Length: 226
Image (cartoon, rainbow, N blue to C red; front, side):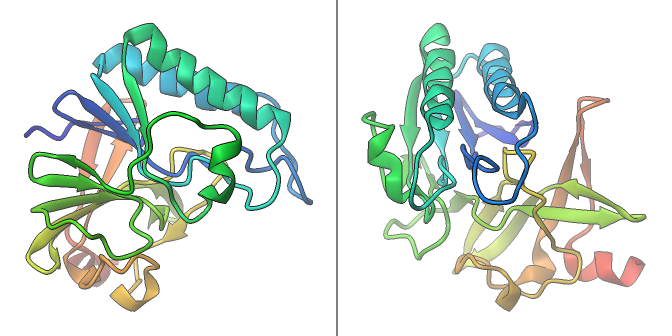
């Protein structure tokens, strides 16, 4: 199974996976909502579906941000995501995350606690999975890596994280999420129970300007290089 990376997303054969869209982030409280950020989310999502023409698109948790309210802008954005999938004939599936308590108010499509694709299981990663798999693809922690003072969203790939299984953690698809710097984090610092050995997590950064991935040593070695 090939694992191409693209704009904070992952392609598993003919299935596109994104995590932590947090639609509605910035629409309430004291956080200013940047003009056009909803449109940016939908347009980047649409670009991915057009480039990869997936059979299915799976949201690995936290489609929504708010626990209590769902502004109209959220409904419009979710409709835009649906439309992007419809235009390419992709089936959109949501594996609910811990923020998705209001999901039923904007989503009546397919939901699965855990989505299986061969030996891979996609889930949010905020709780222990029920299914056994060789690989788990998760979100939840919003990983970023700091290099020479600059923070970059990153994927984390680690063998033998959950038992003998590999864990691949996606960055948040929403650019409003600053994320957490993983450079010096231990397993206990991660919120996902699937991370058990942070030293073996290998950061992968998607360079949008060059449209290529940049791979780094596992965090245990990377810390010694700083």
